[in-house]
Length: 466
Image 1 (cartoon, rainbow, N blue to C red):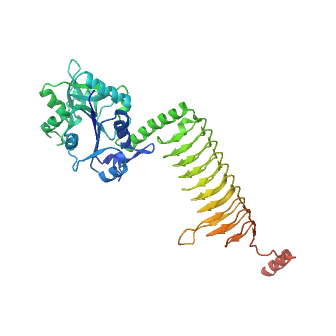
Image 2 (tube, rainbow, N blue to C red):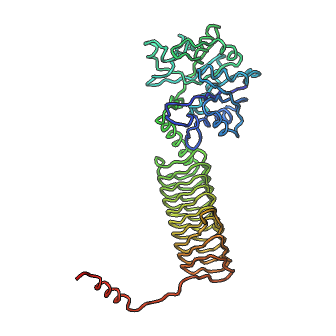
Image 3 (cartoon, rainbow, N blue to C red):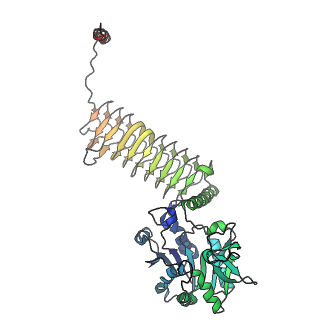
């Protein structure tokens, strides 16, 4: 078994995407398109070397994949696929095994398919092999020409093909296995005498055949695996394929998904056994959800950690937050970044929490805003309560101790501290610290004016004309 080095072609802009973003950085189920081929090389094929050929937005690609063990080759001008591979040769100077060439915009290839392709390449002692597919509409693809024995004779690009050759439905996927020793020499013989004036990697087949070297073609069983993404229509097709794979994987691991057709879960999400997802849920990013949770309809969760036995009720939005075991959120709740909800705490309907910790067993059942706050254990936050955390220039913190009772319609003007076991009367505006065990109240004394209605009626009559 030879060592493998992988070259991933990712230098093109992808003009048909109609985007300022380079094609291979467009997201597919929460990860950039390029991630899928990089993952194949690093974690499934376990290549000795993984080289990504970059061009457009090279700095952004390198920044996005800075934590991956990959090398880069820069293709300043996009002069064709052979020219792209040529840029990698300095990085392959001492490598003598098998070179696997992948495309950064072909993300659906399965590890099993690539492993079969590589094993067949080794077993039939080829110098070069191409992965092919039979498609109903081969327009735009290079056609595969085989010998009577089935060996690869030539790959003809669409624009250079004859009418007869264009009828061939077996197409080039752009994925190759090549012996490194031949690749280094063969690339030097490729010219650009074609309709596009580019250096075609497909011409490497003719170079090998002139040397009487064996070339082969390995046909993939499912052509959907090797679809290239060129437009946003293609992108949507690929997302749907990956989405179905993800929800199936979750269901087989013990997650109940009531309507798989309307449930969107990113590839990076982890969900524990016996958790139930209702229709129209969207779970994104690096979210982790524990066991026996209930996620009701129309919930969106992004980059959050959720413990066991948590209930997220309808129409709640949770972003970059942490929710501990047995907590309850919603309906219509909004947890903004850096919120932490402790065990058995409850955030009810129309409550917004931002950059705050809500202590164990505390509750804000309805119509409240809690921002930049530390809330202790067993605290009651009454309806209509808000923390006034912004003075027009910077944010300030509110600290509420354990077992505090905050009445309805209270304003806590930060920075302010409320001691444990204290109470705040309804309608109070708190502007200074509340001692432990005290009652804070700042209402204007109520005054009842008798006969008010009759006075108003008399005034109304006087104001009428005539």
